[in-house]
Length: 448
Image 1 (tube, rainbow, N blue to C red):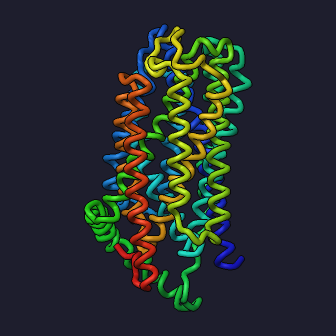
Image 2 (cartoon, helix red, strand yellow):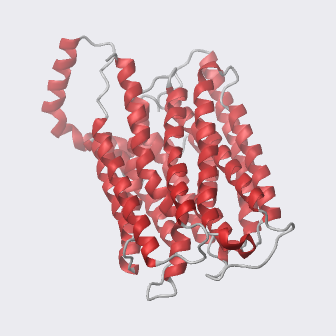
Image 3 (tube, rainbow, N blue to C red):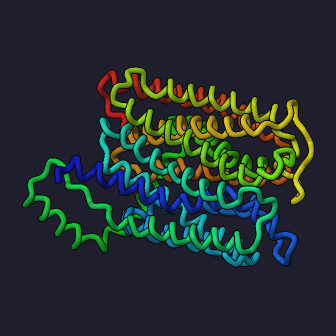
């Protein structure tokens, strides 16, 4: 297998492994608040929003040390161990207790930070400046396929149900735990890329030297990775991209946790309100897959850079937010277990709700594929610290959003996202224009 084919194989395996893991985790996140509402009538008392706030809060703090972890143990082992913790969190829902639920939330927050830093590192070392756009699109399309499969099962399994029984819950989460473990094992199929511009003998000698010196270098690697992360935080490019990244954290919270809960709380959707959560997730996934595939295929022939894709994402999201504002009752995110009988400015429409799900997914893929692409391009020499800062900002904003989702009415949540979306788009434009200008001059823009 040629070096280029091996790298493409690794990207596909990476995407498929994440597809299995996040088929389980994103389906879990999509239905968690609905399942927990049904449990709160028993001895269990907890909040899916609070759990997700803990996850993303710990996630954000852990991103400060994850480049050191990835530098020491490598991306493959980092992703495998993280996958085990993802599976543990999902398994907690089979028979949940408040202490195990919130403890698992802490552990998965740490695991998520390691997982996503290692993913960014793996994506970058298997790409170059010509393939990073294509590979980001391939990975994103495969990853977001996860939204389709898990939610398709939820749609059919929960059709016509207004309450989730204990047997329904256990069946779903046993299946999701197994699916997550399958994805975790797939990380072992990723192969180490061949060193470039080295003869075979020289490459072997280098590997022997690395093996001898690895013990002494581990501490140095860890310290250097931590220092680079701190230095990156205050660079002009990363500060500007942080505004865009903050927006992706807010809208991630909305489409992955809040919007499904809103749909499930609207009593005027009738007996389909719970199964519509699954259908919403499916159409979010279709939007993500379409966006990832389209922008990955077009990246080689895109003469206009990344800005048009980000502009498209912003416009699509603003249309979605306006339709949700018209269609969904303001108290839907914080409605009690009985749901809400309120109306917004139009009578709640299932068709409009599902259209908005598709638009949310499409817009999210626009932002995330271009952020992955520009980070992999700018920091190709040492990507782990850059992706750690990216995930630090995204996850801390997601944590804040999950926290305020317990209290804010829907229209206030939408307003916050519109403001961040506008300024995040402008910030991305600025970085992309600077990158294009420096590349045109032939300067090296990729070192930290």
